[in-house]
Length: 481
Ligand SMILES: Cc1ncc(COP(=O)(O)O)c(C=O)c1O
Image (cartoon, rainbow, N blue to C red; front, side, top):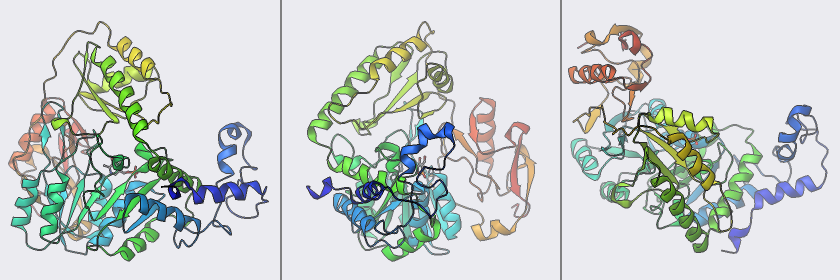
């Protein structure tokens, strides 16, 4: 534990700065001495740490000194075989994890409501993805996680599955029976790769859900910057077990990451690890007390409902409020912004607040936030939220054409009503539920067209589908069945 008090990389940067160094190296701001006056107030201090691979400061791509020490402390804290600092977010972690674990044409099971970095990685790796439909929570009106039965069904349907790729928790902090899925996968010697972008703090333990690392996942990627006090883009990648080759992960990380990694980001990862390692039971008690108090205040506000996690299992740091008035989640979020309260996300029904992982004695303006939410919701008429979405009953699905073929075929626009039998050339994601309705490369069925038309008629919002407002979708020119 005493070792975890150290911050070797941060300390080396402080010592370097204490020498009043004269810079004749990159970057061009020269330890912050050459910056424009209007920016100096904000940048001056941090740029003193924005250096390059100087003597004593090690090299992220071939660490032997302070970066290696800092990564070893991270591995020791999470009890992994190897842990890496990432300077390009969980995005790069997902790319490297999937490229390292999968080969061309491998069959891999993938949670369908995954982050785009996972979809991009599948494409780069040229695998044969089998998509697993997540569950849907009717109270929250959002897609949640994949359940064990869906995984069992897919393992039964496909011989030779080479990896399972899951997202845990979902954006709203909801978790699945990941332990059950990992047990099932390991029975078949299938590695489990987890995008735990939102759960870097889960190793604190109960009442936080267990971390995917603790549950035995083979590779876990975490955005330290999302919930720990780390700088944006700072992330961790952990390798557990022996089902995936660590050297391949290392190799892909040096391919995908900058050859000039940011020292402020890396130092913040070193500090965030110490923050997590030194988080005490008293800190946790104080945090729980503050959150309970904050939620109790919100629960008294007419016009919103504070949602509870299904089975009481979920991330304490996420608070989702659902409107019970004539505002959509998006409108509520905008009104809060007018009061200078900036939230993480809104959907048609909900607004998601991400709370800080405070330690005992640290303050945060929860009271003021509660008062502002109350002000925004004042005198709004009560309105029950009705979900307007339709769900697929297919739990397991595949692409109609491979990624290799997709790269070679041109696309065109067709009317939605005439799209049945074509292969979709874009990914269309309705919100809610945030589960892709059509993935690039999937066949457009009659059922999908009906769902899409119903969603459009009921005013659903979409990500992707740039031509939907014209009643069209992009399809590949060949391949109509
Ligand atoms: C589930 C999930 N995975 C991965 C990412 C990418 O993370 P990063 O922003 O650290 O690259 C995000 C970003 O929001 C995410 O929500």
